[in-house]
Length: 116
Length: 114
Image 1 (cartoon, each protein chain N blue to C red):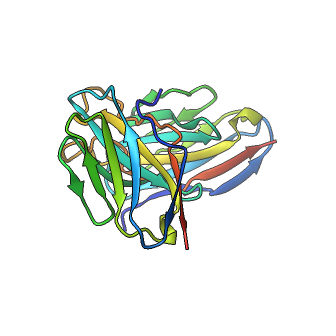
Image 2: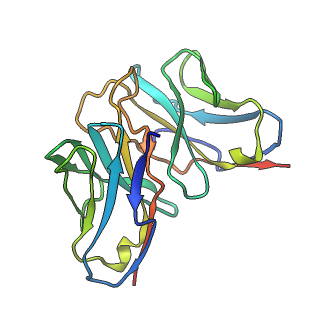
């Protein structure tokens, strides 16, 4: 089954304790990205990756890092989490083929992060 | 900012057609209309997209006006499981840049009632 898998689904952590949220897709997609979703603000892009070893900032990259060492994996790293990073996070991937489908088509189930 | 305007909420009776409107009066000639939905904080789910012709798939139909300034997503026989937030997004389809991000508004919260 084609899917984007995020782990963990829920995480409560303390300020300053480094954490990683994993994202993996099994569709051989080149494009992957991370979003956060906050009430009243909608989904906002954090980082994206066009391919292995190619990453770039989205709209709200501060406090986050990413890496893309393999095509299928795109982990999100919070080196020193703060309470304002409490949010619902989504990973997405895109096939990049088909007219008009150069956009995210598959999303993970989300990671709800609480930083206390 | 999102380039679309949607009503914040709508209701629909189970078994009836749900018609969700979207205004995109500033849409450009090369921008597609995409629809997604999000069920109770799960990951967004792609529904359908179109450029200027009406489109239909197993989930829904998309009707785009001739001037392309508005569109309607139609769920022909809504069920309780269609209760979700529906997002209408416009975006250039053929990716000219590197980033394929979508700009999300707040969508329409559709409640399907028994």
